[in-house]
Image 1 (cartoon, rainbow, N blue to C red):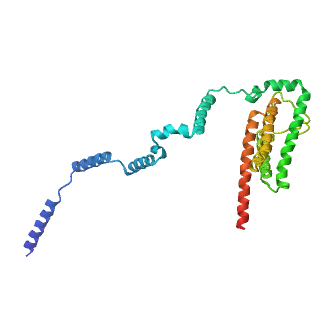
Image 2: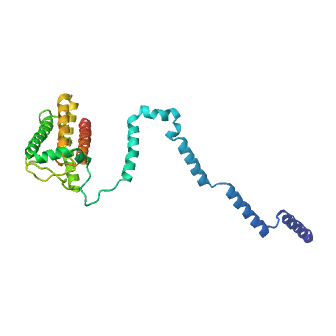
Image 3: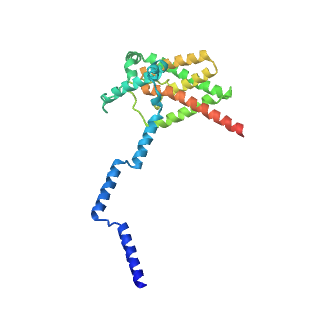
Length: 279
């Protein structure tokens, strides 16, 4: 009985030994080499996902849908942005090849160059300079009177709010960067601010307030008055450059400031109206 069991166990052991071949060190090294080769042939999941995401990004990109007709039609349908694009390239070339103005030299200003003859005229005739300064002060008074009129008499505060925004921002920026008085400045006791007092150069409140008043006139369709203010504003710009009362950048930013703060005041009014309606 015991002999039979023993022989049966031996036969079972021999069968398992035949079914489980011995794994040698050479087999292990061969399997490692095969796994490494498979990894080199098959890209990783992260790299493949990145590749697919990039391909999907460009496949759905807007410019991939452009046709030759679209590219050729850009100039005819969008001439102004094309001019701006050309200007960008031009001024990039100018900026990166320009000789910087040294600290010991006065600022370079195209407006001053364009008004050299007028500057010499006013410098040689102080009475004329004083007359023009007085007329300019009258124009500033006209701007102020109109802006206050729209609020106090007509009950439309937008122009007044815009002027308050504008002069507050001008005070902050003017104090933050105090530019030197332009060389050859021709002051006058009747120029605004009256009395030859100090003032901020950046940016021009004269120009910005005139723009604010003109925009309000155009909203109310007071076209003749608006065009009169625009004409006087142009003359004001020429005078300020001729007397070296402002740099060109002060006047240009003054125009932009007038437009910007008029828009912000309109946004403020609309928001307050919506809040009042909700209440």
